[in-house]
Image (cartoon, helix red, strand yellow):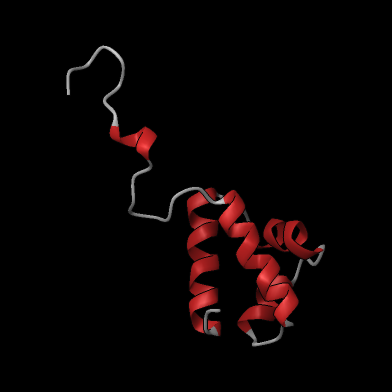
Amino acid sequence: MLTRDALVSNIEAFLARTGMSARQFGLAVNGDHKLVGRLKAGKGTLRVIEKAEAFMRNHGGPPAGTASPADSSPPQGEAA
């Protein structure tokens, strides 16, 4: 499991990458629109933290700065 600072950094990167708001993230993860603020304040149970990590794994796509296999192929009609 991540430290609080690393978790918050990962959430912020996820939000930037996906365009999701902190409010939407909290509602999707745990039905709590203030979840991100609570996590930043150091509040959150292990269960909620694990749910946030799982949500990001399942909905975030590749981490920022990495290419997925689909991104590495040239567009149709262009040579490699």
